[in-house]
Length: 275
Image (cartoon, rainbow, N blue to C red):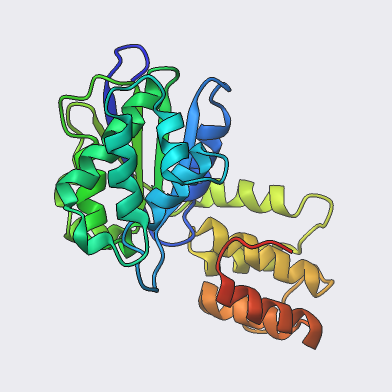
């Protein structure tokens, strides 16, 4: 994208826990500092969340500020800066999304990214798109439509069910790449477990059970190893939780009332929160 100054789209799909977000984070972490990296996460619930990922990205670009003035500053030198700022502000304002035409929001979003890409390449990451509303999916799709003559890469992260709605995203095409993550095989799963248990030997019979139970899901395997460590042993004699959700529930139940109370409140706030 940087070499040819074009806009590209990358779709990363896989079941929960296979490492979609981790893969993209590792890639983004290896980019040089001259690259803009913006990430927005779709929420599974709430009102007025259609463009929540877009709000997060604009705040990241504006150091926490998504006001019209800040958006105009981000587009300094662009003739349509005021118009773009107005359209995006209206789209993000509570209760006003229905009064702003989707095509105007799509245009304004693309213009903002193009303005930022004049100075350095832009990587925009949309996480959990399987929870996105159709209008946001249309926005994400529009960002990669030709003509795209700016060094922008749009990364779309989702579980496989999203492809039921956007089947074209699963195909490799000009300026478009699809990456479908699969469960780990026995050898990489063993290597991951070795890494997770470094310094804490695990009994051979337990290693086999952990790998078989995880079924190639790296997050599940990681949580199984952590659970074993928390119980202070190297061997598991009891039945293992049959799912990742059941395993996490079992770990939570072992916490004291103080920690459990904090987690209950944190779960209401969301993924990210302050002290």
